[in-house]
Length: 236
Image (cartoon, rainbow, N blue to C red; front, side, top):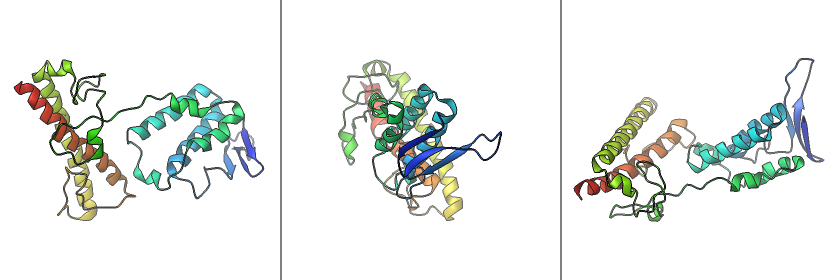
């Protein structure tokens, strides 16, 4: 399998210019080269097509797409890749259907990760009202109200140490990002490194900024919600 002919003006395949050439992608009219597409479609599609043409292994292709989509759900894809909002599955469907594959089923088969419920008295973000399904400390399925499961609540000392260790690790990550930003801006005056709502820099194309935002959100969640709840468990 070395090419896809989607329609008269939509095709992609491996182009070979001389003997021994490994070939490289040559496309027309599809999302890998369209300027109106976005990075969250273009980047995985290029890699996915190379996998299809080089390995012909549908299991490897499925694994790659599901891993990429999992990164999307976890917020590990830079915001710059979402500049243009559009559906990504139809772009893959037009190509995969030529092999008789339904990539939408691959996507729908992924487990959904639910946000944790907030326990702080001041609920300023909408995801603070989402129900919790996994324990923040041990990540096991939990039907207990709150962000910490019954087993972790039964061991308050161990839970407190795990929470404190996670908060220290998140703080260290923020400090490392802060040093990079200070070198760029020359100063961090007026900015809050713990709050995702109070940051001086607004360069959305900066890779460091895109790393800082989820780190700041995670730190705020652990400090305001999980740490408070673990201290309550310790006092019970």
